[in-house]
Amino acid sequence: MCYQCGSASRRSFTRFLAAGAGLTVLAACTPEAPKAAAPSSSAAPSPSPSPVTASAGPTADAATVGQPPEAPAPTPSPSAALARQFSLDDPASPWVIVNKHRPLKPADYVPADLVRPAVAISAAGEAALLNSTTAAAAEAMFAAAARDGVSMVLASGYRSYSTQVTTYNGYVAARGQADADTASARPGHSEHQTGWAFDIGDGGGACSFQPCFAEQPAATWAKANGHRFGFVVRYPWMLHPITGYYYEPWHLRYVGMEAATDMLNRGIGTLEEYFGLEAAPAYL
Image (cartoon, rainbow, N blue to C red):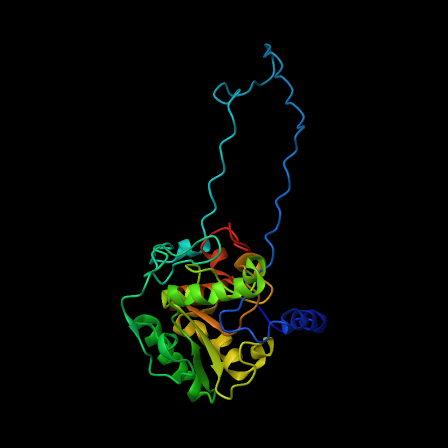
């Protein structure tokens, strides 16, 4: 999704997040779930079929008289065209979908292969870790960016369930649960816990976790080239009614080169759309 939108939209977006500029990497604003329209309570009854009478003209096929129409075949998700398929539920799968409707199972999942990638890192402790597949892809991506003169750093990687509990509870205590849900993922609902996602920063440290990061070299390079290494920008601009989070140009998610490139070529911005899943703007 292109960040270069109208100046009015950008000013509005910046004002929206200005109050939250001090949030940690856990912060994410959540829009209210759209309300479904209430069904009509007074649908007109269908007219009774007229008796079938003999006629000299053509008659209806006897096999179809009084039979309901066939249900349309389900539309396959765009990902169905790929040769390889992975689980959308297994947290060890590169295609696992974690959002406000799809918590991790088990909720306290810990990747078995956490490693520290050989890249520039500004995070410490567990936040400097990724699962081994994501780490290898990140190393290749960071090296390619450096060859293009772009300095990129790993700002936040793995985040355990216990860390998320502490962080989320802190938001609830300070701001109440309703407001906390606009700023922090509930425990067991964070992509960071899978090891498949991480946040990047610009080597110069400018605009970290702020809207203006979208215009920094690290962000623009990752958006244009991340697919070559299997990464997508997980929460694109103006697609928060689907993802549940406002634009995070720093949050990258590994799904593999095949899927990431296919999404780019088809112009599909979110994993929910790509895998044919419902939008998840708010918790169920």
